[in-house]
Length: 283
Image (cartoon, rainbow, N blue to C red):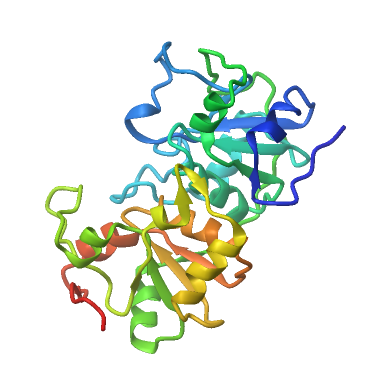
């Protein structure tokens, strides 16, 4: 049996029923302090392989965090995970749906579409009482044959976003909290000015979720409709390109097509002292 994904999300029950299927690859895309490989107390879904966003799957010579890697780097590292062109990938994280959305977006940006996110992530898996292991591997002995094909339309640069600010040809949606967006809370990166890109709209990624699971399609449709964004292209931003991908996921579920990520996000924008910064409330 070969698995094929028809939706961007799968349930824990769906995954549990298919553990052990030949072409299934399960990835842990947890980022940050909870992603240590040597933590034996941590639990994993059986057969999990670790997807290291911050090291193997970011451009290491960039002065910005989590910068999208080159096509060659992504292809090389994905092959180490044992991913083939006909694989079926399910990705999760230890929070719910957080950095797993970044992994999903990276795969799709590099031409691989047979991938879905585990709705609710590891917390939902544990709550349902499904089997766990205390080990994870970082690569497969047999490399995969995955071939990357980059879709540059999924990515926007600082120059692109500055052009959008001037032309209003697209909407910029920011996934950070309201406090960070309006500059009433400090940025987590030391020395980085708070505020937002002029003309951008605040849509905290947490607004699209309930307890780490994505809201239903009708609820997501209503959220995006309330923004009155029409059919213009959508560009998603956040702090460093991670939670912007949660908004991409929500927009994809809601049926939007012309969508992209400002990969440098607020870190790139606010680090450039020549770019305008806003902190005014709309309306």
